[in-house]
Structures are given as structure tokens and as C-alpha cells.
Length: 292
Length: 252
Image 1 (tube, each protein chain N blue to C red):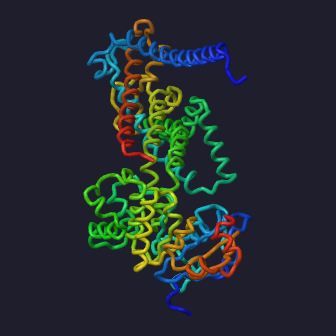
Image 2 (image 1 turned 120 degrees about the vertical axis):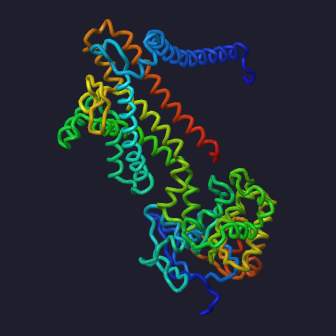
Image 3 (image 1 turned 90 degrees about the horizontal axis):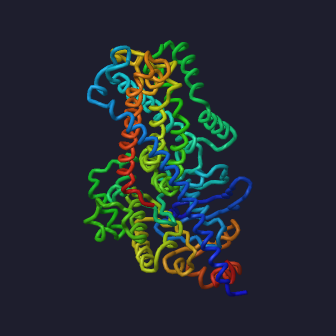
């Protein structure tokens, strides 16, 4: 009984190989799917890309010309959403992890945040319309759109920030507090800097989502067409996701604008990846000295 | 009463929720002495140490009764700011816990943030590191991360960091339990040196260490102070049988 039969060993080895193959296969399918989508977009979209395409406004009822106002609009909305979502999200996470006494109220707040993450984006759009556009009288504007997107990405940022704050060792907090440094200073000087890479990860996900969503900006910020650039945060803007939606469903000539649609999709994907890359580089830079 | 007493505990009880961790503790700590707190795990010695700089209240649902008198005042009086207490009563932890900052910034962190007026920060950093006998090893790498130091060096850095606040009392919670014998010997020498200027209260699991470095020893068991006396007496002819059983290794 002590000796394992050669055939048993062989069977175990076979089993192992089989499971490795399955896991590899799963990873491969995901990579292929992503690669396929991106390749498809590039193949169909690259012909539309030119300097004029990204620097000029649309012409001839959007069947020709560029998409510059939409690019700019998406950048404004994304930056706006992050400027609202990040401070609010990080502040909430600090309260939840560092200050709040863990109890029923906090559990309720957490459930609320998780529910918020599951709310369909069109509901955020309608909320933005009712709350920011109508009640606050912001109108359809960069401000209303940024606020709506900011709330949309809030759960993501809070979740990532909470995890990041919790991952900072308790011993750092103790060391600082034991020196007679106040809790507030300890959080700002020790906890937050060490949690920043993790918080950035949450923001990266948030940025991707904010830049790509159509439904939340449909009623709150996006213009069907405007050739003039926004003069203030109370102006409407064009935005890439909405522009794609418009061209593909309600444009003046859907077939004719196909290349422009693909080109716009390519620009949107490139923009999101570009913003993500910047955040990833910053994060890698900050992680260099992290070692505990 | 003696003028050389720095902290007085009067009828101190401490609770974690419903569990009583310390029962009716009465003891006085002497100035410029090394006092060792010994006893088996869970006897309350670390809890007592953390009561002295109000670190226990960072844990939810804890409660203190009785008086802990420092500078003629109960440090648990409602008008006392725990932050002020911690500036005067420094602490070194079981595991070295330097900040992920440079060696220099580890030392300057406390004085800078607590608003202690410092004329010459460089001098203070140098002085603190010299006091912790670390200066010669790190004087050329002050701007390197403290995380690159060895465990023993890190612990001496933590001591230097506490000393930079110029505390009256230094609390040490098993400061050598995570260190190798050579680093431990260095820390023990250091403690010998530091007691000229500071009052040191140290929790230790190591009986020989308590015997070597302390002037007075307090033995705790199940949240009670069993015996508290000169170290020599505790280790040669203790009054209580439990103490003798513990130091001779019969239990614990």
C-alpha cells in the first residue's frame, strides 16, 4: 500500500495536465476575445483616422469631417467625473475605514454603496436629469454630466480606496500615533500616501467607465451636434460614446457614416487606454518604494 | 511620598468589552529606572503598558477604571488629550515598524508634525541616532529608505524615532522578540545607556533579559499584579510561590 502504482501516478499527471490546459484555454479565450475586438476596430477604423479627423468638427450633417468636439467633450466629462468622484470617494472611504465605529449604520451604508454599484447606468442618467438638470437648473451641461458620471463611478472608487486603506499595516498607524501625532495627521501623512497606488487602481477603472458610458450623459450633458466648443461648465458638449450612438442609430445616413463610426470607436478606445496607461505608470512609479 | 516616582497606578481595572484584563492594579514606576513587566501570555502586561500611553483606547469597546497619575494628573481625566500624553511617553513595538520613508524622515517625522520647535533638525536627527547607537551605521545613507535596514537596525531606528520626541518615559513592548541574539544584545546595551536620561518600562517574555537589564520587576498573572519588587529579589527570593514557579520555568 505504501507504493503508489505507476498507473495511478500517470493518471494524476494526466489530470494535472488536463486542468492546466483548461485554465490556459480560459485565459487564451479572454485574450483572443479582447484582441479580436480591438483588431476588428482597428481594421475598420484606421482608414477614417487622420489629423483632420481628430482636430476638425463634423461637417455635412455629420457625414464628413472630424470628431474633435466629441473628443474634447469626453475629456471634459471624464476629468470632471474624476474630480468629483475621486475626492468624494476617497473621503467616504477614509470615513468608513478610519473613523466610523463599525456597527449597524456602517453596514447599512456599505449595503447602500454596493447597491449603487449595481444600479443600471440609465437610472443614473435619469437621476441626473431629474436632480442636476431640472431641480438644480444646471441644464444639459458639462457640470450636470460630470456630476452624474461622478456618482456613477463613486462605488468603484470607494470600494478600491477602502481596500487600499485597509491594506496599510496597522503598525504604521500605531507607530505614528504613539509618537503623539494626531489621527488626522497620521491618516494624511502615513496612511493615505501608502494607500495611493491602490486608490489609483480604483480611479483607473472609474476613468474607463466614465469615458465609455452613454446612458448617464444622454440626458445630462451630451449634445446631438454642436460645432462650437463649450465656453463654460454650463454648456452642452458632444461626447464620443453618444456620438457613436447617434451615428449608428439616428444619423442622417447610417451606412455612409460607417467608417466614421469605426474611427470614433477607435479614438474612444485609444483615449481610454491612454488615460489608463498614464495612471498605471504613475502607480508603478509610486509602488517602487513599497515594501512591507 | 517619594519624589522619584514618575507614574502611579491607583486601583486600575481594564476591560475589553465584558472581559476584565486587569484587576485592581496598584503600582508606582520609578524615575530613571528600568522596570520589567513579566508573566505568561495573556497575563495583562502588554495591556498595562499600552494603558500608560493610552494606546488601548484605539481598540473599540475598551474601558478603564481607576487613576493613572503622571505629572500630578490622571492621564484619563476628560480634559487630557491623549496626543499630548503620547508625546511625553514614547513607545517601541514588538516588531520593528519604521515608516516607508527615508531614515532621516523617520526621525524628523514626529518632531515636525507635532509642532515641537526644533532649531536644528539635522542636529536632532544626529543626536537621536547617536543615542540609539545607530549613527555610525547609517550616517552616509540618511536619505535611503529605512526599509533597507536589517531588523535590528530598524528596531534601533524606531528607538531613535521615539527619542527624537524627547519623551520622559519610553515604553517597550517586547522590543527584542523579533530580533537575533546579536541585535538583542545591542538593544540591551542601549537600554542600559538610556536609563540615565529616561524612565524605561519594558515588557519581556525573556526571563534572562528581565534579570539582566531591569532594576525592578513586576510579575503579572491572569490580570493581577502578583509581585513587584527589586529585580534581584524577584529572581533570588520571591515572596510569592507563583512568582517562583514562573521564573524557574515551572509554568508559563
